[in-house]
Amino acid sequence: MTTIENQCIYCHRIYRKKENYEKHAQCCEFFHRARQKKSHDEQMDSYDIIPSPREMFQLLKELAYRNARLEEEVAKLRQSTSLKQRNIIQSNLQCVKPALTGVEWSKTFTVDMSDLESVFEYDLTQGIKHCIKRNIGGLKTLGSVLPIAYFEQKQHNLYLYDYDLPQDKDVVEPPKWQIANQYHLDKIVSILSMKFLQYFMAWQRDYLENNKKEDEDTMKNKLIVYMMKINSVNSQVDRRRNEVKRVLQEMGKAESATKTESTKAESATFKAESSSGKADSATKAESATFKAESSSGKADSATFKAESSSTKV
Ligand SMILES: [Zn+2]
Image (cartoon, rainbow, N blue to C red; front, side):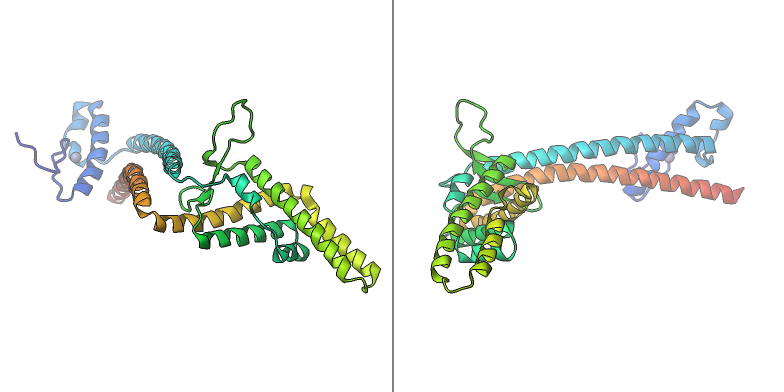
């Protein structure tokens, strides 16, 4: 006996469209199995039998169960995909060797009057952000390899080329690309805060020197306000850290884009690898969605049958 394509093995109905056949087959199989348990009389011409409310309930239960399993599967897939992506990013970043680690690099930053003015006008956090943007902006025009990287769309991690922090081992391992943590960020913030303080002290000296004629009280008051702003080292630590991270991500994102242009061969392999990784999981996710959809299709047709049965009665 030859099997005709898209023919249901339970009721022998033939479908022109594969999709309709698949929707039908799963449903038909369910009712077929359910009816096998029933008496012979009831089994006669199972083709036209309208599912009973009990059968409908069974079907719904089964669908709910399958759906829950699918959801679990999708969640697992998502998790492994993000882990895969992280591994791909990290292993590809190992080819990029910046001259300095992130923390060392922040020590090369300079503070200028425009940064200080930003502190005076707003606060230390704004000043630090201004300083980072200005310094990295200058480096980018020189085409330097930065020790930060950020991949938009992929993950919201900031990658940093640095030592492991906090250093809890006796043997110091060489720096490597890793996800920047609180310790890295706090170190960078404290280095830059110190630079601001030094710059401010020098500026204050000059200011006092050049403004001797000014009313002393106004001058002192102004300097006290400035001093408080510069010294806000211990206030709003979390906010400052998060904002600095965001600026570094922003600057690292633009940097990765220019990196792609300059080293096309490297980034091409990177893209190929990451996209094949994506394709893999995307197909899986898709087929999972497809299954979920087709099972909802089943539910639909079940509802339809239920409705048509009520109209017949
Ligand atoms: Zn069938």
